[in-house]
Length: 407
Ligand SMILES: O=C(O)[C@H](O)COP(=O)(O)O
Image (cartoon, rainbow, N blue to C red):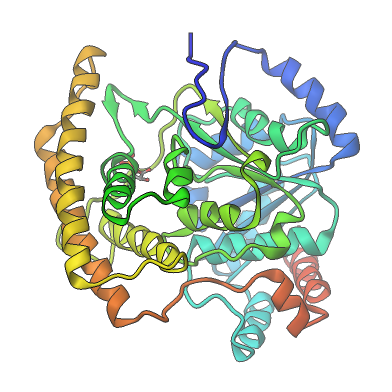
């Protein structure tokens, strides 16, 4: 039986019973009358050809409570977009595919670039941002869930549990973050979450002194989960990073905009596995190496907005403190694995920690050299005030694409 502890400052909604999916969904269908629901799927074209997404779509096709599905499609040419329309055409729910590389959405993006309002980097953050804009533009949904398209262990229970906290009209949550055990195929995964994020937050708590934001971040059981849900009004004011700091950035924005009692996390899956990226030991522009630098910079930036000052010496002591804590964590994870009959390769874990430690210095140096650099995409409120017809235009572009390229 799962635990029921509330160890952090954010409410945790656990999996305390094996509640049948039919019973959860029956409730969600009732909720949807008061709070219509949407799902955002940020996807790469390559994921349509992978192992995970076809199964995800089969499951979603069975979901009875969704009012709309918004798919953000990245890295697709015209033929691939046509194929994507066909692929997602299996969904019986109302859905739209945002062809982010198509001429219509590109033209809008170019205009936003001229106003200095477009995302500066390609990637998931940009994709999610346009999907959020589309949800605001369509104005049809009140509660919105978002999850990755590379989940190998997908089951529609994940979606039901993810959206439930923001869908139940008796609950007051504005935002819910998903969590799950990252154990699959006899191994403990989640290298960046386990070996960078948690030990770095603990190291920052030691070096920067008590900080409520760090306590807040430490409350999340899986801070890098790509699954979260929110009420529609969250979308107006959120600023999201376009780099790998997306998940951390979303949590930081929730901390800035809402009281803790409006936020929660929920246990959404018994098992979870996704596509694993390379550690990328020798190239800090790719894989988990780039991810770790972006995440570390996101944490430094947020602390700087809270009045913390940083210097090379400070980063050195953060790195040393991190390193000690992370090595102790490896022992903890190892013992946990052994007791459960799982595998944990200590050598690989230490290699990852050594690289993350170096990347903390790189992120720090980068922060000192470019203190004003920000990967944040402007909020939709700001974009709407600079371009008052932006929502109508975004919606029209998507509709026109659907008309022109659909079957
Ligand atoms: O969640 C994480 O820590 C990263 O996405 C890496 O996950 P992995 O180690 O399971 O590939």
